Length: 169
View (cartoon, rainbow, N blue to C red):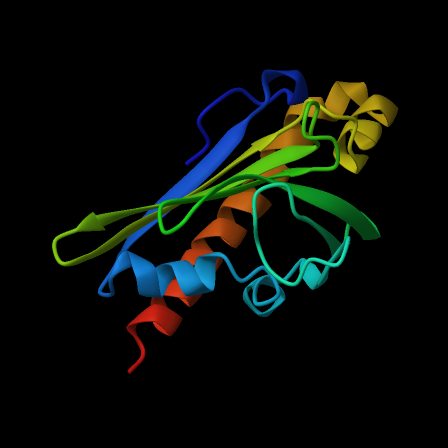
């Protein structure tokens, strides 16, 4: 569900959640495995840790290589800004103080399983999307709406994939 306006400067967000028949500790293993994420995404192609990191931790950095039919291929560096196992896993894309985007998973026990919530917010950093909007300012709302729809679909697919993995015997 899109939560805010259709202008980049409004820092639009999308989010979705699902209930998973598995404890938060099991779900966490999939949520916090960023190297697994490319198998869940049509856009994210690969991930590699930086600075000698081999897994998630507060302050750790990773590079994601992405591909999109409209934007082409690009890489971004993400910084883990929240890491509270098995409750919250979040990262900021590029500059943590002025990110291109923020991403967050939140897990909470519910009805013998886990309520998994994924959220993302665009901006305010100058991403490829911001550059595209600068080239076509009269189409900003359409560009943002299309991108947010793509991201919403991606979040829904990611949650479904994590659910399948976590509920598998």
